[in-house]
Length: 287
Image (spheres, helix red, strand yellow):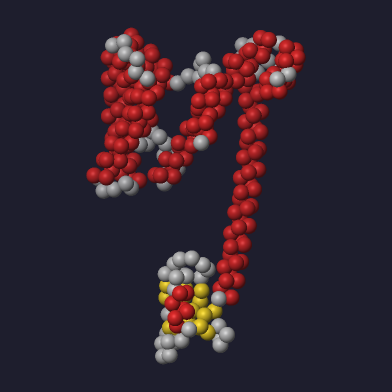
């Protein structure tokens, strides 16, 4: 204990660490002092002489062992996630190649791989051997649509995970807060105004604007109802979503014979998607 003894002035600096003080008269009483940089320290103080005694090695050894266990678990989980991710990526690539070969013009799996490899490597001889029509169908028509579908689905999955984390609810999705309904209302309004009044309103931008406005309205209602807690957000989202759904139905009624354009947009479609669309959506999802 003599080697470990330190002065009272020196021990005041130790209070910046996460320390445990045991009072000399009350051995069973332990008091946590502060939190800051450095590992925790075990300090006992004598209430008579004011001398502080500092034991660091046993506690540091225990912390080092705990850190090693945590690091091992983290490395194991990271390696497992990396392995599963690579396996899923390979499975996704295989499914994409298989999906490209399906359709009115059937293309074999080997031919699809040959066309994709020829495009990436710039091998014109291999590309001409696969056939000009098959190459055009694979590279210009089917593959961009499938790539767009993959990234759009990944974006929806990311949005769902974000809402589940925010609301602490595994069943949460963008429809829970009415954001998807707000975007649908904005798009329906833009299509209706473009058709009836001959305007050139950008449908995606108006959908984004109404989605953000819906989120702001849900947050404002939740704040007036007692704070940004999960229950308030969900209830406010249901209220706003019901109002906007009624608005979408009203716009459809006003559209008359042109309602098919609104319904087609709300249902969604990957038709006529090109590489420009894929390069537009891919960076947004990846970032």
